[in-house]
Image 1 (cartoon, rainbow, N blue to C red):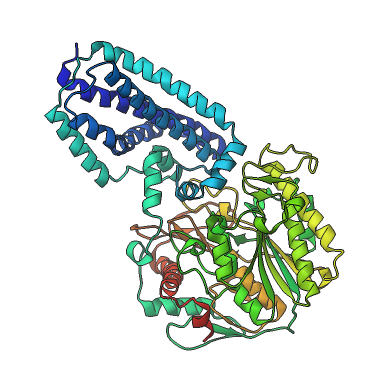
Image 2 (image 1 turned 90 degrees about the horizontal axis):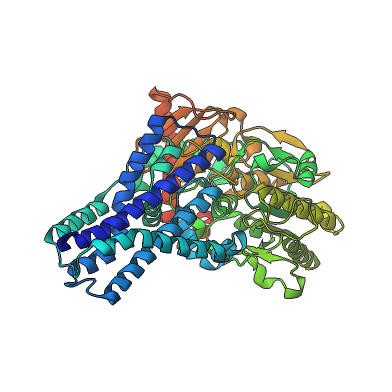
Length: 631
């Protein structure tokens, strides 16, 4: 018989054994998935290292998760003194088992979509539970999965606890040694830094999902100056001004002023502008499933080397409206003081335009309505679409056909009022659960991303067919781009090829079809548009007109939640929290190569720091406010 003074420790030990086993199983499944989707392969020594580091990384989160149970076990004088006590202990063990198995399922599904452990996206999912829970329910057989988890947890609990109850002595007195061990391990858990190799996939596989979620929540906001390299402010603004200087621009003042007056280089033109931002549309998705976009591209000004600034829709919104680099942490769209900023809407309204944000979902998600309305846009979202005009919905909103019909109605009304209009139209259909109306495309609804992309392409084709019959069509510029790619995960934190998105400027008869191969950023779209329109204006943008940029001077910003990158045609600089900056050789068609060293590396790093440091400082100091830029 187990001596009674060890019974509490054995109970915790059984739970720890289950925790380690579940995480090892998850790690095995993710390793297989990584091999399948990321073409990752590991030799035996690498795989052994992943499992060893993973076991160590799993150990400390257990003591945080089990802390409430440990407090009860260690402080209560008598445990398991009868059937009721054993029943309660068994139910608690079963609940923990359910939680472990549910976490394993959630991690597997999350990896399947994002090729990553839990990150800031998972944190956002915990905030916007309505859309997320509905999305999960529509994407997966939720009730059978939960039932399977509960049943599996019951079987596991029975297999582990039945031998335990037969051998353990009851009641179980307290153990001072156990108290000391638990206290030390819990304190260590709060101080522990996970073991992590350099390769991103190995790091993710070695990580613990609960710890990753906790870390993402803890680092929801990052102060650039506290975590990233900093250079002298005068040097930073000098480097920024050097980058922003271009033909036809004049800085408002000297020193730390990035504002400039942009002079037009062609006659002014004031067409309507419809900017269609397609959910998760990476350049790799254009092809056999996008015949309408392909046809439009042939008649458009195409930017073939344009990079998204981040991996979330709010990052795309930030770049396309504010023309800024992606400062670390949450997008500005989701931060306090995100209103009354100098934006693309500022320039349009100065020219007498009506500006509207048109979205098929409920715009409170990700703070989008608050951001757009706080920056002078009218809101047209799902709540503004009459019920009788909605033909299909899923967790994220109405289908793209319904969205585009709403955009057409809104454009017709602006035209009727004799006001030029700018619409920012955001689609939703290319998103899990990938459902859309039946009978529109040959790929069945809900079968995957290919079908969703095909449906969005169909909806865009229908939109242009109907728009072409409107009186305002021939005097309208249409801009089509992605907000981000469908997956930005690779073997490095910042794989440039995973940020490549299309951008098309379409206006037959007014904008000549051509391909622009200059490396550029999503944030360059607004100043490029205003250049095409021949507008003179005061600019607070960090973006530049691609048409005024020499190919050798191209640059783009890419980021994750914490990693910040700056691309040039032959280099990639990566800035990460509390790490030494790295500059590597890079070309558009290859992964990062050998490290760049010497004075050139120092200059490249300084240029990257200048972009991100000044963007952070200007936003936090309030100098990006509309009033501050225009004064």
